[in-house]
Amino acid sequence: QVQLVESGGGLVQPGGSLRLSCIASGNIFSIYTMGWYRQAPGKQRELVATLTHTGNTNYADSVKGRFTISRDNAKNTVYLQMNSLKPEDTAVYYCYADQIITRATMYSDYWGQGTQVTVSS
Image (tube, rainbow, N blue to C red; front, side, top):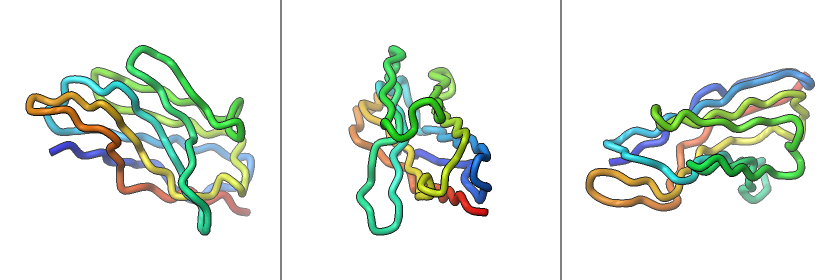
């Protein structure tokens, strides 16, 4: 069974930084896309950033220049470095993975449990 486990959320002041991590486990050979989405109270879940196995990135306009996504394919881990945080970045951040190749099968559209990020003074 595949699991995505996030860490690194918390409370930070405006202008501060946080680094989120997500580790995928479960006899995984490879993962094509890993990334992050977020959901603020009363809003729909939205893309933050994704990164493919081959290095292609996609960022939401609202985070470009402030957030950086990276991954370690050997460790099946994706990171999100968040700088210059704003109150509007407050949300639950969800790790996402697609086309997870394991010994038994391929999984699509897999989600972590989420980690809370709160930006407030």
